[in-house]
Length: 493
Image 1 (cartoon, rainbow, N blue to C red):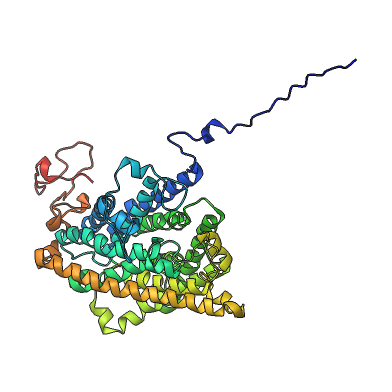
Image 2 (cartoon, rainbow, N blue to C red; image 1 turned 180 degrees about the vertical axis):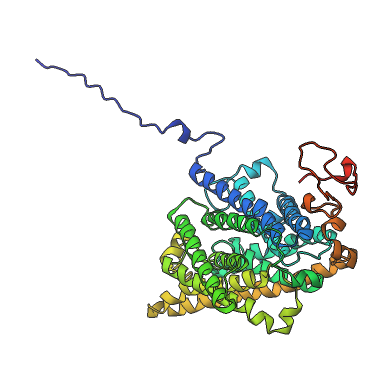
């Protein structure tokens, strides 16, 4: 007797949680974690500008220039974003028109924005925003060299011209896969060249053409800062926001992103300590201004190397970024006549140009081949080899020397291009409007330029004098010297 056993085989289908399943809004190619991190990183970079640098600039100058300084940053961020989505994004990262520039195009179409970005597993909309806030902060950094005297109308023309003719060329050349320096193998992890070296050189060049502030403003800066505590608040936003600045560089929530964030803060801490130590020994006391400058040089120096160097190298870079820019700014600057003639209030030449160039060179020296492979995800072992590691392997010494040469060549290109293009832009703008404010506006500041006072209680036109009593709502509390003013003339703080 044959017994037939009916065996039913059940296949259990393992399904992903519903929030991880792909659909029309979340296509298969998109990594939700990467997209979320990239949007967060972009927002952190945006917060560095708005309100970070707005607060920093507005607090570090005299109270008569607080509104104008903050407004320059505020305007630049808005203007750049509109230029970015209208034509500049495609010029920086679009289809190649020539070896150093992409074809202009609008980045507002739904089909394009919802498609996959050229790098990373997230949509173009995320990439456009992320790269847009980088472009925005670059112009705000340039503004730091022009505070306290540039004609606001000239600045409003300068911003779109510079992002169009300078930023796009450097960004395409270094960051776009079709760029000529990108193909050469330059290492710029998150903008040491594209943002900081460019901003430092362009700001210094523009400061030359615009001319200096009024003598009284130069003599009292930064001692006459209207609020040093708020300076630290703005600096704090800048520092912590750098987690997104460098942590978003890999375009993926990876181990390299984590390393980049840690290296960023370690280098910055070392740079601050070195700067304030040198201030203490040389000038007898540490200062908030010095600490902020040390912070900035550390952040700038580590930016091109953040995710491709060891932690110990990040500390060494912090020691260098806290000392060499300190020397060029605090000692050498006062000995070189050419440097003394150019008025650079935020010292962007030293904190961004010098520190950015240092970071690029040190990246070429300390870059770890394995970390570069993890960042660039390429099998080409003839590129991305730091000289320190090339010297350890006789077969890679030539590759290490070549990497250093590429890093130096890129510095030369960024400097020369920005000096030429920024000068041309200033000359063009000067034909239309004066670059510098007139003498009366330089004396009055915010009230002449914007018709506003940053601190209404400190306004010279608001006089509450000879208080006799301290009774709430007592209309007789003030003497006859009180000047009656209409509601339209009063300002709220």
